[in-house]
Image 1 (cartoon, one colour):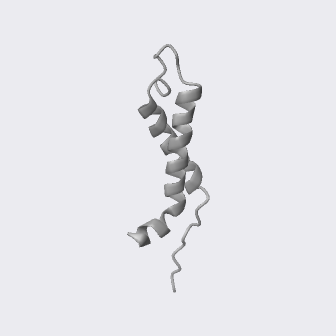
Image 2 (cartoon, rainbow, N blue to C red):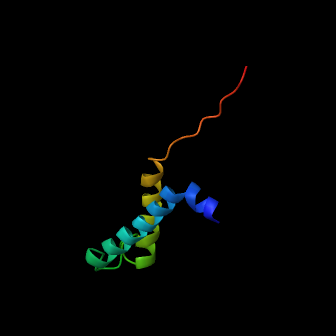
Image 3 (cartoon, helix red, strand yellow):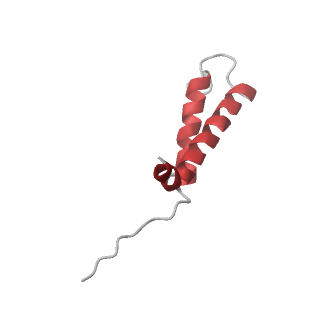
Length: 70
């Protein structure tokens, strides 16, 4: 389990930060009419935030290149 956490720590941090930011967006800004697809429900807003957080934080991960010996 700890190998998984150390390998994906930046992605997990992005998911957590995105979920909190998505819920904060719903709570403070939200959608009063209920017709907004993302911000009308806290679950939708949090899931969208999780996705955006993962994508943003995973952009900072180092890429591992495989070296081939010829």
